[in-house]
Length: 449
Image 1: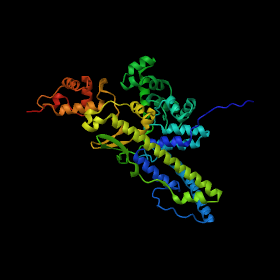
Image 2: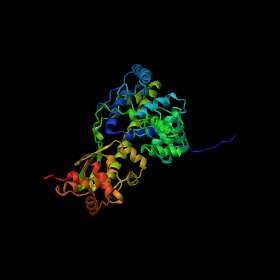
Image 3: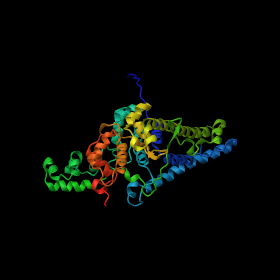
């Protein structure tokens, strides 16, 4: 027998909560706080200025017991609701799901007999899934961010990939489809094709696939039918297409003394405070049961406050870095948009690139030129130039708008004009951008006399 001392950083619920809150849009955060105020009695969205005096001890204890009973009762009825509203059974019936993919996976985790640390790690990975249900983060980078050993993250990811919907947690389309086939017990040509021949399949090069796999063409066609029945976006079913997608800006840009400054909504979201009555009750109560119940509720509320504060700080720092880099856009318009990567913002702010990705997810910026998704400001340079893809499109549109309609510019002439203005791109790219802007070719733009 020997004693071994080692230092291990354990993932706790606070880390998961901060990641989830960081990814929330302004509307999601507002709804989250409203739900929190209903679930946690110490959370008050509209607290009176002066806290009330605590009541007598027997009344305090009776009230707290009632709250605790309600907690248990709510959990019981929620369990019944969860059973009756299984998302997989409701697909195509209810016209959409009223819970997020992360919540759905969380309910499955609760039913697994996992140790607490593994369950929390799987929950963390679920919070990192994108809207399609893919896990696209690098495990080594996530291990560095969270302090969780990579092998622990790898095991948790394998658990996540066994959950519903089939294909969730995949790193790419190939693995997503392979997971679904394996779950259904399908192997053979279909599995081989999704693993190694997806691109030829998309191009309908069936004969090439048959020759490579040394199988009859009929088997390739049969496998193609099987693959077409799979879901390439297993997480998309948890969206709610019936709802109107309102845009609620998270960041506002204002010009101050010649410099553009980013600020967040801040006080415009619902006020969130810890109710003064319960805070006083926690300090003055002599009942152990009362203090313990309130201590947990107050700590939970404080954790959310810290997560929101961190979200605000990270969001405004990332937004300010974007604004500083794209200052010409706010002065001159889209044609001045410059190449920018999330890695560039990460270096400017001093955080990890994955944190930037979470911070800008589904966030919108409002300025004098309009409302833009924060992700819109990220683009690579057009053909390695100093103008980003969005800027190149804007410059292309400006050239076409200003051309002689009797003698419109060909794609080659547009290519040469763009190069003279510091945007060297190929003629093929000009045609691609023109198609994306729904602008016809030169013959289609020519004014008819």
